Length: 219
Image (tube, rainbow, N blue to C red; front, side, top):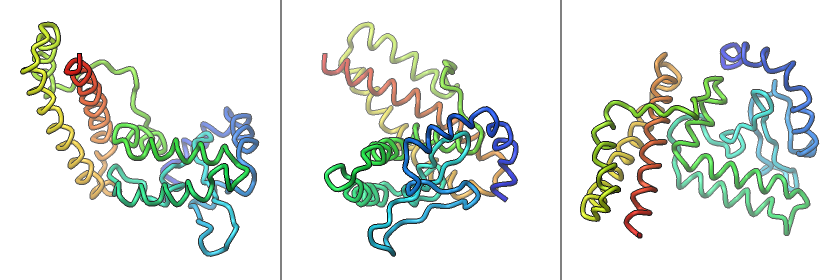
C-alpha cells in the first residue's frame, strides 16, 4: 500500500536523480545500502560485525526513521530514540569504524528526529508532501501572541518577555501533545498530512520566537 501511494513520487524522481543516487551510493559503501524495493531496514544485532543497512527512498533521501528503527510517525518516544542513537554512535564511531560518513549521518538523523519541527519536515518529505520552508504566514491562532511579542521586544520589557516565554513554552508542549494524537490516526486519516503541515509551521514560529525571547532575556 505504501509503495502504491508513493508510486508517483518514485516515477517523478527516478529520471531526474539517477546521478544523485549514484553519489549517495559512492558516499555510503554497499554494506550501508539496500535496494528500495526491500522496504525496511535491518539491524546487525543478530549477526556480529554486519554493518548497518540504510534504506534510501524518494530521490536519494535517507529515511531517518528506518535508520533508527523507529515508526514513521509524527510523535516519537525520545528516550527510546536517544537509546538507539547511543547504540548506533558507539557502533559506527570513527575510533572503531572506518566509515566516518555513516557516523556523521547518524548524528544528522538524531538531530532531525529529536526536533519536532525537523521531524515533521522529514516525515512529510518522505511522504512526498514537503512543507514550504519560506512560508511567512503566521498561523491565525498565534497572531495575538505575535502582536504582544513585537512591543515587548521593542521596549525591552523584561517582565513581558518572561511571561511571553512561559506562554510559548506552554504552546510548544501543547503542540507536542498534538503530535501524539496525530500519530494515533496517521495511517487512516486523510487529513493527517495537512494537519502535520499546520503543526510544522506552528513549531517553526514558536521555536523561532522562543529563541528570540531567550536572547532578549539575556541581553
